[in-house]
Image (tube, rainbow, N blue to C red):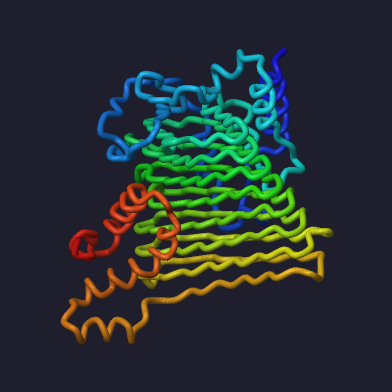
Length: 414
């Protein structure tokens, strides 16, 4: 029996023992997982979708395309000389990278924020991206992983960057069907000493689509991880992001943006474990909520014993454009050291009346003034994206959702 097969069986046992979370669980208090119970199972592979003109077409990148959770080799464009393959191919491989990546499949009830969706993912995901970068290597273009679906599916990616390796990875989720369905996605990441990864994750699925995800990051000494989590699609989405800074001098920078309207619901639970000395974490989340949308942010930083000289800062800002929009935010700090520098905070409010008046007094319409201020508030998160093509795509998609459907070029005069 292969390691992956054994791991899947263990994960299935864990799923059967845990079941799906309920609102009685503190971590799921504000997100009703019972709505997803009947959407869990996929209907099987359907690779008939035409992906032409989908996604960020102008992006200069290597492509991996997955249709309903299955790798579409004919639609993909992979670099030469780099160990990037689909999970299906990995399962039959016997090299050391395959063994190391297979370990990323293992799940345990002791893992932070572990739940039945994550266990089900590990038990049933048949495909995904398996990426291994050798020591001191650098991917010369971003790797763009496009997920297109028209039904429920599970998918699991494993990314392992060797010592001082560098890469930029963009995950993009799009759904085409009007039917209710669920994407269940996991990305497990290992960054060895000095490795650097910029990881963008754009959830832009259809109005009846739901999305549950887990991003699990383990960082070695002096490694660097930058995350951009964008929530603009779907009816219900939940992402658990867990970062373990386990090597001296490691750093992470987590950025998140929700732009929601109607009855959309998005929930991000993040957890950063400082388990080594001299590590740094930065976290900036912004939400813009309109209609009857609901945002949830729970950010937890754990500074463990021995993690001296920890430097951590977390900020969550929220703007409610409608009296019926709702946000639940809970930044948390647990510190078991004296010699640390940590801060956290959250704000909730509406657009500033004085700033609106200032713009109106200079001949700007009320709608345009509102859009400009909202853009300025939210773009503080997007400015951290190094890839300007991806940033501009997200800006256009996000701000087209504003109450008056902002035209970004017109608004910025570009």
